[in-house]
Figure 1 (tube, helix red, strand yellow):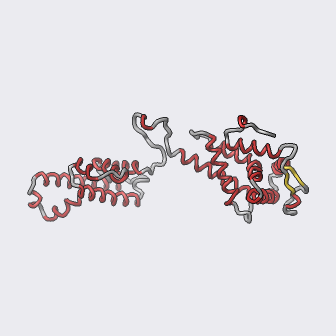
Figure 2: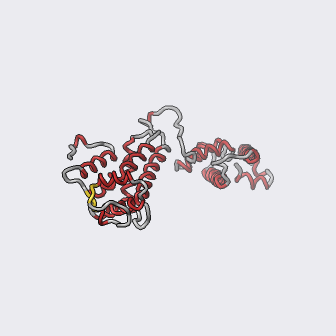
Figure 3: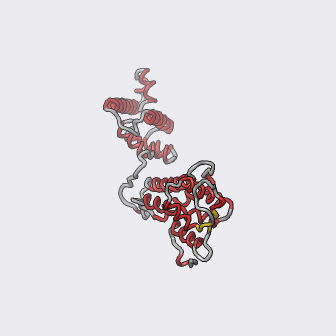
Length: 298
């Protein structure tokens, strides 16, 4: 069997299946001498073509010892005897690989050939290095590695919203899962009162966007040191909230009330500092305790 360049499938799994068909067709199909395998495995004796062996295994689904013996040999040959045995192993596993690819592609919004490629890549990685032939069920281990690779690819793809040209998309860009994206955590902190609304964008710009702090402080009308202290206090509050699960789980009514009261106190202290600053020397006449608290408030 020969395949021209124009007839070669674009799907990685289909291409592997085509290569396997070419290796196992007449007049010189690939064979395996079953007499060299475990005599207690319950396999037929003699030399058998891979397609006939595949059919035999399909008809004897509960012949686990026989399946293990065959797959140990296939893996061993794939690692030692050349690329044709890699293709042979992929071809023998093709029903399971196709089944996984079809299952994983349900609801997938990208190119389904990418799912095929990841499933195949996971299988090949396990075939070449990861499956321990001293352990039982090598075929199951290979297939599980293939499924995990495809599943990880599909899961990761759902963390992004594909668009044709992101620079020309109008309107809000609402991310999908994971909800733990840093911007979304800051937004939830604002909603809970952990971060004042006026501090949301400066915090995102400095901490997440790593922008220069000086122009941002100037735009807010505060000194750079004051903004640094303010952001440091936000860091502390966010770290505490994350540790308590406030940003990733449900918040009780009592906890929400406490956060609102703390936010109100910060707002009052910030307003008091603004009045004091506007009064010039008023700071020097304020209560000593207030002088101590104001630089660390808000």
